[in-house]
Amino acid sequence: MEDRPSLTLRRRFAAVPRLVYKAWTDPAMIVMWWGPTGAKTLSAETDPRPGGRYHIVFTTPDGETHDVSGEYQEAEEFSILSFGWMWRTLPDRASFVRLTFVDDGKGGTEFTMHHSQFYDEPARDRHIEGWTGALDKLEALMAGMGRSTTPA
Image (cartoon, rainbow, N blue to C red):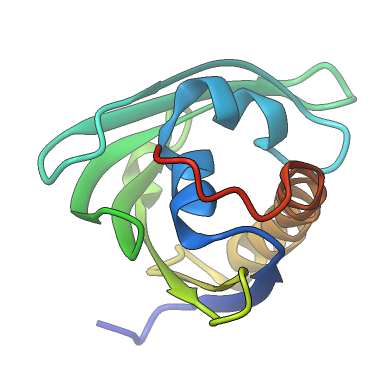
């Protein structure tokens, strides 16, 4: 199944896993950081449970609107989140995302994203760029929120 292109990105966030996980599952938080550099999230809907769905719409600086959705496969609170990834305009090019959130013992989170089953290498490369920008924005948001241990 890994014969198609994939990517793995890792980050350390200055916030506990509960907060980082919430940033991926709470629509009010998703709109604060989602999308590549310069993107603005217009809407986010989530139902983070196996079989639940998500739907996110954002615009990029060039004015283009992007619409992505999928179904959650795994949703282990504060530790694992996995989901299908499908662009509205390219439904035949679905891929798969798996995220892990590990407490680093210092009030932060070791985060790993594995995005697999890309249609081709150019698609993977575009996602590396997009995810890198999005994770930069998430990192800044988490640094601003600090080491909150408030329940999600």
